[in-house]
Image 1 (cartoon, helix red, strand yellow):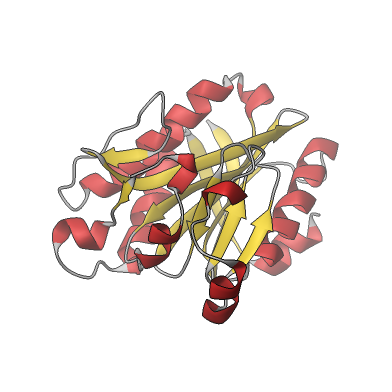
Image 2 (cartoon, rainbow, N blue to C red):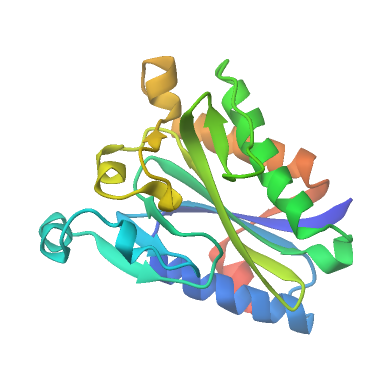
Length: 226
C-alpha cells in the first residue's frame, strides 16, 4: 500500500486548484511532498481544453459563454474538451505512478473502476471503455477522465456527474465525441443524490482501488509541504 494525503475541498475555482496541482506535482517530484495527494473538489462552471484542443467542439459562441459566466481554460491534460460545474465530483490524484510501477493505461483503468464502484452504491451499473475512456452507463457517459504525467507523477484526473446540470454538455461535443449523451447519478436514480455520500464513496473506492493508506489533511497542511 502507498501513503496518501486526502484533501477534501468545497466548491473551488478551477484555476485555483490547477495551480495547487502544479505545485503539488513539483513538490512530489522533488520529495518535499512525501506521500501521494488526492484532491476531491467541485468547481464553478468552466470548459477545459486538453492537449488535443477542443475549441472546435464547442457549439456555442464565446458571447453565449460570457453571458452564462462560463470560462474556457486550456490545460495540459490529455483528451479534448470537457465541462466542470457544481454537482460534479472531481478527483485529482497527484500520484507517482513510476514509484508504484503502474502503467498509464492501468492507472486510467483504475480511475474508471473507481467511478464504476462509486456508481454501484446507488445500484447503477457503469463500466469503462478502452476506446472512449470514462465511465459509461450503456451509451450514456457518466464520468470523464483526463490525466497528464510529469516526471512520472500523474495529475488531473476524473470527473463524475452526481447532481450536475447537464445543459452545458449540450453546448459541446463532450471529449470530442459527437452525439454523446451525458448522464448523472441523479438522472439515473431519478432523484437528487447526496454529495456528502458521493464524496465518502469516492474516497473509499480511491483508497481501495489505488491501495492507499489515507490521512485526511487540510489546505494549510498541504501548503506547508509545497
